[in-house]
Image 1 (cartoon, rainbow, N blue to C red):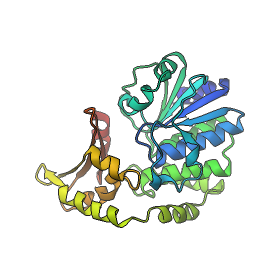
Image 2 (image 1 turned 90 degrees about the horizontal axis):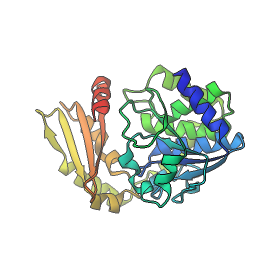
Image 3 (image 1 turned 45 degrees about the horizontal axis):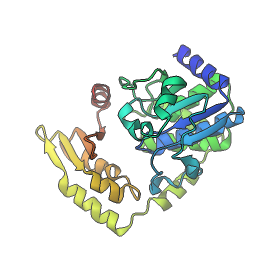
Image 4 (image 1 turned 45 degrees about the vertical axis):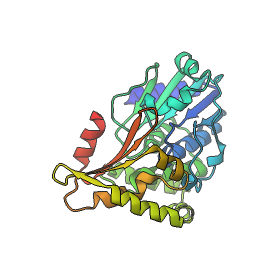
Length: 294
């Protein structure tokens, strides 16, 4: 682990121009982590561009700075940092941009993630990963070990990311270390109260979203003697609703809380045959095993 942190520190400190890349399914962790890196690396004198091939969904726009994330990709950057994924299929839209594949294959690439699973990236990279509740927790430890300043805005961004992926520090993957990091970020000036005030305002649901939630609940299927709950979210739904609210998040908690359910999965399907799954369980051992296998 110490080697990974040292390797990441060297890559960043040697670079002048850096692109921070989110996958095509941005969430609170990827957005907060990207914005935190922009702050931290900006204080180091780096020229930082934030890239995501899709628009940041409206439900994430309570996060200050979301509008600095752009679809353009600076292929002249010295270093490319990918956050919150090691799955190449989730970079498909970025790879379709002219010059991006060449940049990833010819430039230094650092991947920062908290998912302990096999990487499917086809280009060389330095991987910084540790079992944590969020990618932002990994970034906090990187900055701490490197001796980099975490300013107030960076602390807020990291806390947003941590709270998003841990659902307010309530998931099975939330550990004592997660609470410790949240406390340190609060000491650095982040206010979870202020974050929640903004988030709740943006999370107010339009009537059609509540109606759609009812449709999703009607679609839930049960397998394995009721231990597995599954809902399918087709591409048409993604196009219509994702900008207003993440369809998976609408029903996953309700699915998990059904009597007898051990694992709940929301599966999104796309026209090119790709599918992604968001899963949750009250049993952390099962979640870890499933995440590593799939």
